Amino acid sequence: MAAGTGPGGAFAGRRVLLVGVGGIGTAVAERLAAAGARLVGTHHGAGDTAAAVAARLPDGSWAGAVRLDVTDPADVERVAGTGGLAPTLLGGLDTLVVTTGHRHPLRLLTDTDDATVGDILDTELRGPMLLVRAVLPGMLAAGFGRIVVIGSDSGRAGTLGDAVSSAARAGLGGLARSVARETARSDVTINVVSPGPTDTPLLAGMLADDGLTGTVMAGTVRAVPKGRPARTAEVAAAVAHLASADAGFTTGQVLSVSGGLTM
Ligand SMILES: NC(=O)c1ccc[n+]([C@@H]2O[C@H](COP(=O)([O-])OP(=O)(O)OC[C@H]3O[C@@H](n4cnc5c(N)ncnc54)[C@H](O)[C@@H]3O)[C@@H](O)[C@H]2O)c1
Picture 1 (spheres, rainbow, N blue to C red):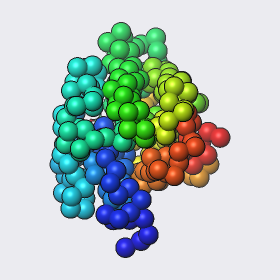
Picture 2 (tube, rainbow, N blue to C red):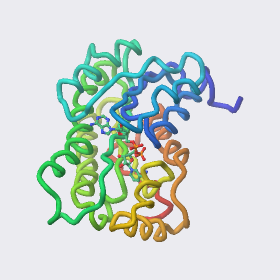
Picture 3 (cartoon, protein in one colour):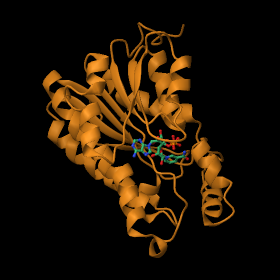
Picture 4 (tube, rainbow, N blue to C red):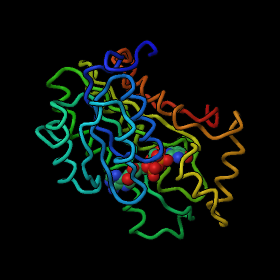
């Protein structure tokens, strides 16, 4: 077994709430569990693979899957708050990884209705913000915590037809920078990992579209200097670094893992 992996690995004793076990979330679960972490994963609707992923992880690393809708503040508190389901299942909580995203076709802002605007902002900005607020008291009381939110390079560069999501992702940077200041005197950090196109069912579905969505996404993949989408394990590696105990001096950052798409 490689150094830093398994029950005695770099994440031994760590207790992780992983919100969203989709394409990227699955790779995060595998990476952290292989390094010794114990996880609670959340599921919400179609495309979630929490049960299948749990079966592949090392014995003892999966503490359970819980249903969570991040658009519902009471649900967030029920799962992630002090005394909530996740800290109870894990015997505490020192790490939060949020991967929530909204599967939606790209559409010009002028063609986007109020309900869609609200839905995307709730899932990609307000939900992660509520989660961060819910876990912070416990982390600050314990004197240690790692928060990593998955954003998107659309928050840096913008994407044609994705104005609302891009605004939400840019907002995650502001959230991280502000909370990093609020927590700076403790060993609690918060960072954003910002992928470009990443090889997941989400991307495959967008590329298969024969309208604006497929055209824009194919162009975005072509624009990646490294010439291909990220592998989910490459995004998970960045999450693992920022969630590691060693990364305590890195906070309030947005780290692009996009093959140079934005620099
Ligand atoms: N795959 C890519 O090419 C790519 C590129 C850049 C950014 N991202 C972002 O990375 C994140 C993960 O992407 P992915 O490819 O794994 O997508 P995915 O669709 O597989 O995962 C998204 C997860 O969010 C969960 N989710 C959605 N709405 C929720 C809600 N209301 N409450 C709780 N959970 C909810 C889903 O159940 C799913 O587990 C997303 O934010 C996505 O936008 C992905």
